[in-house]
Length: 236
Length: 293
Image 1 (cartoon, rainbow over the protein chains, first blue to last red):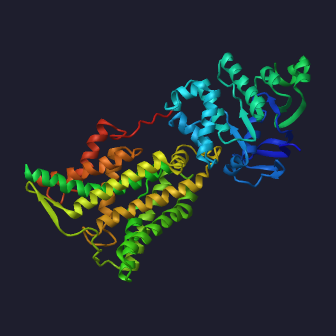
Image 2 (image 1 turned 30 degrees about the vertical axis):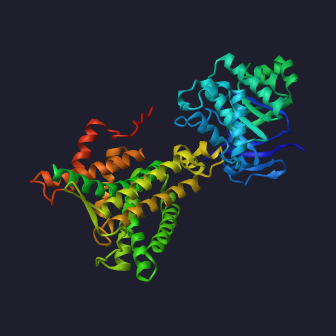
């Protein structure tokens, strides 16, 4: 059974409809890419899934319809969202941000153990644990945003344009981290990206969005192998 | 010299009360960016509740505890029923709403308990000590002790507890808090409840010094607003320091500047606040907020 199953999802801002009935699926243990040009509705999709935006349609998370569930409660169920622009608290220390990530976790021991584990994966964060987050570099802040989301022990991690504004080398480092947490911790990832090439090398499957609809779904390898598709759908 | 020290000591005790109410104002401002002009009258209302419970024969300590719980519920309910519906309205609208709270609770007290002054039970013994010619009353020391305990427990709550972390996060950014699993509305409601309890404590400290009356907190509100502004609205330490500075300035000024006397003493904190704001617009401890346009 799939971990996330979305059927006919509609959402928008005020009177403006952005999502016009999208359906997608993510299986446990998978990395899935959600690609598309600017304004296609990728960010809106993630915001609707995490509940920041009201939506119509069916969202099954591990078989449970979460459509009516409060967004804060969805985090406790295992749905983590790293929003565009990272969503870390700039005035808070690195450690406080990580503690906030574990806000839904009751056990102090588990929080301490998880923090130690992610400091292992992101050593730069350990060095800067007492610093204000606003003083971190863009790459470090993105790493913090991901580590923070992982602190809630998510069953599905949704990342919105993690490469935005980062240098290519930093982006590659981050994608290696995605690969590592998927391999070592079995984390399931749904990644929204404009950087189609790099994302397709990481993901097993991909959905392509255009003006609020899913226009294509395929194995990543097929998309990568077809320059025509890349050109027409991804503007590559 | 002795007179000066005496005025400073008395000023600190009065300032501790301004500081307590300023703390309540700053708590709410930090959480919801709203100046709650009704804070003082909500506090008076809760002090009347405590007084009424005592009148009905409840022991003072129990009456105060029960009223503190009621104050929490009142603050949370006011947020949920009155403030939240207008929280997305313009700043002017919100100001009118919280001024409305001021009038509503004052009127409610007058309606329920009339305008007579009531004697509130003393919280501290009547005596005191004279040290090097300076009179230290037990009440003054008690008031300052309560302020210290209050400030330290609030600091500990916000710094070291998970609830405090959640409160700070909810105050900083609603969307970001939601995606880490914090129920922002619940946090803001808690914040208003907490502030209401802090305001209640201020009222309980005021009531035995004067008399309990529906208008007793109105001047304190003016001082507390000045204290919060002086300290910078974003800083709890600022609220405490601001309250104490204003208490001392008022007491020393009224004694040593003969032309001021008791009629003009309400102007001292305002003049002081104005002077500080001219030099530091963000207040003594406030953070300068730059907005990119």
